[in-house]
Amino acid sequence: MPAAALKPKPTQSTAKRAVLLDLPYDPVEKRPLPPGRPREWYVTHNRRLKAMRLAIALLDSGVYMPNQARNETIRSTAEVIGIHPPSDMTCHMVRALMRYTR
Image (spheres, helix red, strand yellow):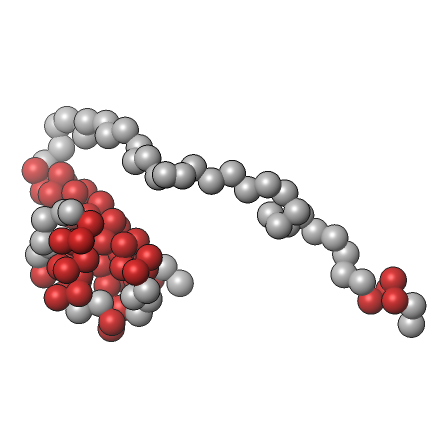
C-alpha cells in the first residue's frame, strides 16, 4: 500500500491556525438583574453563579472529582479567589456541577 494512502486526511485544527487568547482575563461587565421576580429567584440565581465560579476555580486548581471537593476544600477555594464562604447548599451545587459537566 502506498504511503500516501496511509496519510490521514487534513482537518481543521487549531494547531495550524493562530488561537487568540484574551489574557489577562477580564470579567464581563455586570448588568442589573431583571426586576419583578420573586426574591427566591434572585437568591437561586446568585447561588448558581457562585457555584459555577467555585467549580471553575476547583477544576483550575486540579480538583476534578466531586468526591475530592469536600466542604472545607470548597470554602478554602472561595477564600483564595476572594468570595464569601459558601453555604452547605452551595457546596452541594458545586459538587453537582462537577458531576454533570462530563
